[in-house]
Length: 278
Image 1 (tube, rainbow, N blue to C red):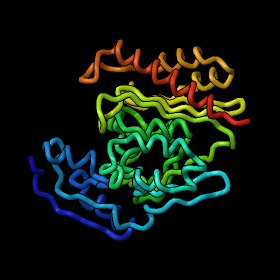
Image 2: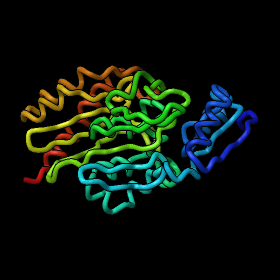
Image 3: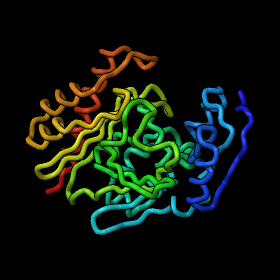
């Protein structure tokens, strides 16, 4: 199928993009990589009169290192996350997860901002950003504000971002030296969403656990992280599984998803612990 007709805009400045959203309201939508929006438009599940392409806006590009955090432009691609040597050294969990997203063709165009902004519970990066305790910068007609990834997701495809705001940058704290990490994902085939996935960080006296596609939002469990930090692996697994709410779909029934969630989480915990240096 082909999408319904629309006007295509490609602004070169962030203010211009926000202005277009204000001018056209519900009839306009921004596009980053397009891997979620374009299929919906082809199926006529999303019918828009105006498409605002963010590709030419410099403010949304680049990877910047600070003393204890990294700022990632929303239009940084999954391929850039994989290829950037400094980023792979500072936050190797990002590279490990990006390598498991779809396939190389998708990763060359798919963007970090697009992956985290639209609230799709099957996307890999939202749970990962919660595990890393990332912060999102969103900018709209009233200026910019910061939203923690752990507070951003409200339900499937609904987030704390307003319709006239654009997610512009993601700030990721740099984990302490020696922190163990792992992203474990089970999927039916190459390119598919996860049946279940788990992101784990574990360091000296601290840990963080998040899970993907096991509820209508990514699931970060403070209780699971606290249990793992205390050395209780099975307690961490039990707490994480208590926090998820999988639904039956083409990837399997609820009990199967719970089983897979336990398997991938135990694998992720074991691999993260094996990487702890101290």
